[in-house]
Length: 274
Ligand code: SF4
Image (tube, rainbow, N blue to C red; front, side, top):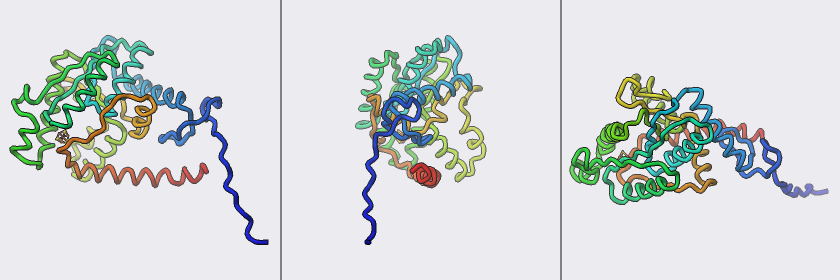
């Protein structure tokens, strides 16, 4: 007899491994569990709630600005924080705070997204611009200095602009959408640069407590892939274009390296589950 004919097995619908009632719609990147959308929303939101409670990120009655760029991270943060604030009675006054760097074809478009989010989530929006604060737009700065060091200027300006905007809104804290992947990249970059001072600070969930406005990262343990999935399934309105002046090659290498490590770590798990 010749080689037995191997017929591919038809995979039946997989049930959600959490509720065992609905059909699984996705494989959760963090745990590789096959789960339905409803259970994904529930575990995603509950994990963020636990991070907020366990780390005492907010106190009742606080005014909180959400750094809003119109990108996926800050859009999901604004959506989830307003949901959790209602559901768990955090008692927070939430605001959206955006910085307009003055980058034509990038920030003007993403600010339109934030303006729609203002209406969609019912959160008041404050926009502070480089032009108003410093008299220069990033377009003008790049014209003067070119594409070398533009991000260094921009980073320093943005930091201060967020502090100034937060002071105008009289908020107690600024919440940013930095996720677990961003923090892993920053750790790696600080190791490569030998920046020990930053290395020790960059993983803190609350920073700047001795400065004018403390900052916190409710997504410190949230995977980027899950933020993208959440935004996609919930059909949130976000802007996904990169800044036209973004060289950031160094961070790009760190990002690729971490993605490779993740693939290597997940490979045995994936094989084991087959
Ligand atoms: Fe500013 Fe650079 Fe970011 Fe563009 S990529 S917004 S220039 S820091």
